[in-house]
Length: 334
Image (cartoon, rainbow, N blue to C red; front, side, top):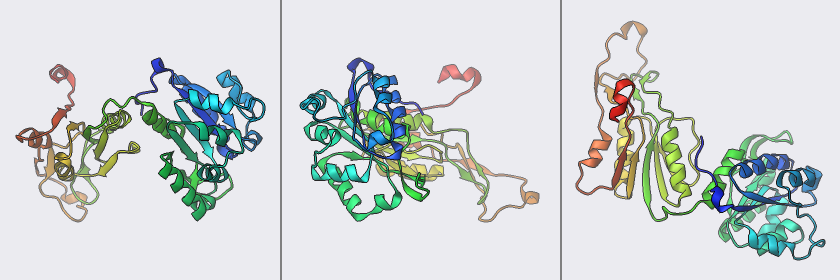
């Protein structure tokens, strides 16, 4: 799902700090993704990270020297920190997280971070047992209390052969967090309620009536609103999409469930954006057990609750944006 990017006209400068983990090779892709969105990059590497990937790779990509020696240019960490808009540590190992939480400054990465004043994104990547260790979790809590944004690792097969939580998140997920941190907050203070995806009306426990909505429009709106500083509640029908980071997501299935979720949050919202493809009809003669094919002859339908109409008929209501899907000649009427 494509959303807004880092604004090219502002030429955001991002520090990418690497610590010594096998996921360091993925940071190459992160650097390229940032460059494509107009950001300029300064890479900082610990000695351990250079055992996994050569500084030459990043120097070639960024056309700038990698900062990896605190004694070559003693004041580089001050200059680099003062010029940056964002500091991203990816991957962040258990050792580096411990140093950050304790204020240790014995390498270029930790030293520069202490001099940096701005948003910090920490992307942990390690063995699942290490990640779950109480001391690692304590250090992560410390970083969050400071105000750093610490991402959740993904669950899956790890390089060490273990299965569990510890994989570095996908580049797209990291980029989503970066966009959120770098975006202008011109919607700050607004509370926006967004609906997305289809609804399903059950015929029996197996079959249902629905539509082809992917939910991409509503999810993209919710993500951009988050990036712009708004508080967002996303009421989502069934989709395969990952919820936007930072949004409160309420999962529903039927039109009635979506109606209740919207109404429960209506008084909270300043703006309601109805991007969901809500079913027009529900099944009147739904059964609690699967209907045999031989008895599946007539399906009685009745109209569902018109959620948008229910909102607009209220005297006191938030600003409302509605969506409609049309095909063929009716497209011009939308």
